[in-house]
Length: 352
Image (cartoon, rainbow, N blue to C red; front, side, top):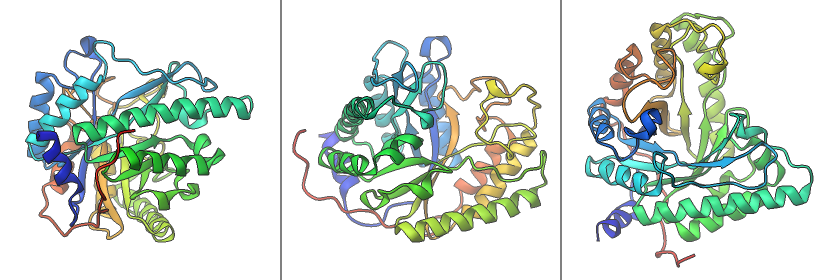
């Protein structure tokens, strides 16, 4: 009965609120003890709600052995982002009045980027896509069953979307037959303008890790100038595709060079210098440029862990306990400034 009510509310016509979101990450520390569904996470949800966060994206993973693998493995092992833990997290967030996106993600075992997948021939690609299709359908069914409020059909799969846009269009149709809520795809920042199936989705999803300035330790004014240019480009993309944009990820590490190479992971930075002020300045410039734009439907900050701790030390992406947390609260607590259009869903889907 509770799930049915959640689905009815999610599918109801009318305005959709701006998505003031964070990418909510399961912590693997201590065997995942404080990850999704834990008591530590319950406390963190309250902290985020007080900060003004109204949307979360939850991320289950599918695993590949290498960029050329044709099989995707889903695990339900203890300590992982299991279905049961995802459902507990969604239920808790809904009880706090928050909405939740489900954003399945691929992880390659040696940490290689999923945007650079390779296949030796067309048959290998077809085998991979068949495996990926089942991976996405599996989580679309979970999203429908647990009343998730948004579903993301893929994340930064740059080589895959370019290879066969028609297959992705068909996949979007299959997801709609399973899941009644709005759907998007989270394109890498340098992929988004070339995606050929935005019209099959409700939102354009953008992973906003584009360089903001070439100068390390740039001033707030330099960061603002960079973000004005980025916002202009995003507005043009929205107009061309005829869809509002959701910034499915935007993140800056607490380092002096956060704005020059936002996608650099801590383990790939040989000389990290802790600079929480620069991280906060990057967020301020971005949020000033984006806030209130008529083409923008939401923002998700990368990332906040379920235990509110950094995964790999203070120069990691998390804004928790740093100056950036204050900047986030400053914007996310602002009074509502209107609503964004949403898609009205039809009758309940048939079982797949």
